[in-house]
Image (cartoon, rainbow, N blue to C red):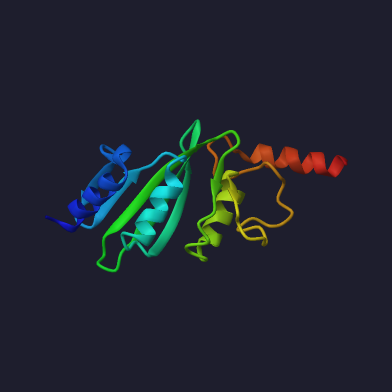
Length: 160
């Protein structure tokens, strides 16, 4: 049995709702689609019980009506598992994973600034990567963003 098959079997044994949601893209590269409701339990399990102790990166993207978030994690043996979840584009909320991986703060701040995701339990800190004077409600990685939105916000601020 391959390492990937073992990971898949362990995930499905622990969470039967993942039965058809775990895929092996190629050797040492796996994906698991997890609802935002089940995400905290699955994330905790793969970190604490399955050895995925390396957070490679977090990727956020605009998928139309939802914002997709991918947590790319690895084990010492080189198996990379990406947990994929999605939040509604209107009022998107996730819980920070900085209690597991303090370095996740940078990626989570990017999701806040660039996509407008509210990340609960994110430690206090400065905006990143956008400047502190960037207009509120303008998220440059959303598909509906354009330069005119930024210019309107700046014009409104000048009128005040």
